[in-house]
Length: 147
Image (cartoon, rainbow, N blue to C red; front, side, top):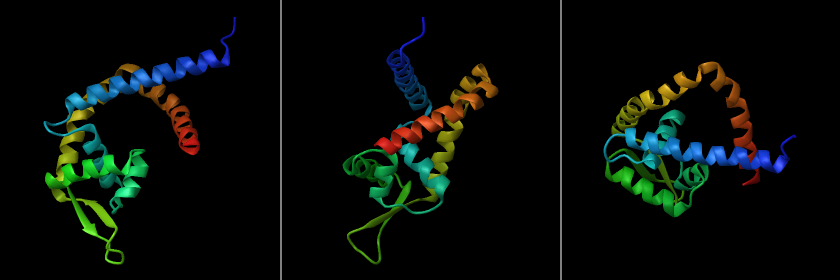
């Protein structure tokens, strides 16, 4: 008997939600003391793009409220991991960039989590991971388009 489409959808999202929860838990435990997953996410993003972003742009990228992003940015600024400067053309706006200390913190976090995520990839096999990535990317794109 074939699975109904709604059964497949429920199974897919149940697995995604559980995998997300477990991945976040494992990665959070591996992060350096005092660093939260949200901090790492912002630092990693800023390091990868090598450019400034406004708090609103970051909130949109991470699908969080502006208030939540402001809270994360305040903690990162306090730790010296980011610089926040005013927009010289519009004083109401701000721009965020990663600091050298933030880049070092991101690198340390990446070094700490790599064994955790690398072990999973090794156990599952790189070929299987490569095979599923296009499906997960397409799923993410479709969900972003609906959001």
